[in-house]
Length: 475
Image (cartoon, rainbow, N blue to C red; front, side, top):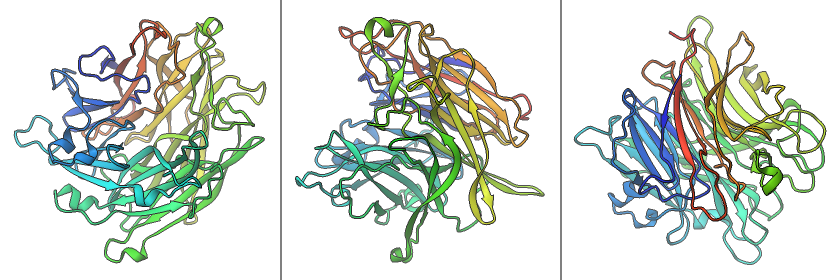
């Protein structure tokens, strides 16, 4: 395992916010890190940053004269499209109305002389819907994924007059083929669920679209799948939701978005679950909790970025989908230790079913949260995550399990924190684990930590750490 320092709040030009959402992706030659509101690129071998200072996240759209995507509204996600060998950035913007902005690189190499971004924007106002007061529902927590026929995006719809509670979701397919070639893209195809949005709390929010690992595409014509948790109202649940998006660029009226289909995943309690307020998932302690009473948000009310897909070929080909979530380790007491629950889904009898599940936890009483999952070509599943407790400063760890043999999970340290987030419950809202497209074995993970306490009188002081590691049996 190797690790190196990523973008820090103290880095000149970082534009640091408390809610930094660290994520990134590994490509053929570089690693791209996104930390609200900037990105930086690192050489995969030397770990040297390409730019003398982080690049503001709106640069790809400024270079393409798309002013609706200027500024910073956060929630950026960086991808590497394995099938096309291109970089992709997706982000929300609200400069003048609400927009979703996508940029696609024209090459896999940031150092290439002709490197450029093809940039696109989608006005969301006509798609969001309005509440009873006539205010647009707020587009939040967008997640983007790569599939052969489109770049798929899922966006939460929240009611700004009801404490920004989740009331629905908007899903869109973007014209990947034309975007990869820098051509005018066809109008994105979008669906809202429920339709109409009634304003009632939507317990199946924060859908994740499947995102491809490796270079084997899914079978021709495969629909894109989305997954979400089914939040309970008053008790434990044993349900995840599956949604299916079929896009038809030739005859858009034939496109469909169907679901949810419930899958039995076995009973669990979402991390930091409160029956009276399922969206309040703040309970992760730090060593200073007893003095500050400041807990971290586990974001236990949703499945976590990414919904990782891999197509295994050979004599017995199969498709594997992996997803993680933060859950309570024990049924009692309420707000107790959290761990990482993972699921592998495969097609059984023509339908996606959960074939393997597990819980990443230890008997150390620490809380594990903020996971991200990926799978290498040898069918090893790895998960990166944060861990914190009453005697452990928030730190970065990972674990792996060999599938389908279901070996015992092996946990290891990436970076130990030395201080706490004392003035905010935010610990980002997501991170990402991705697989090197060259050797298809090496995992790359980014997460945040602190070396000095973040207090009410201090500007943001978080740091990020980027790590890569390889499971021994992947050659």
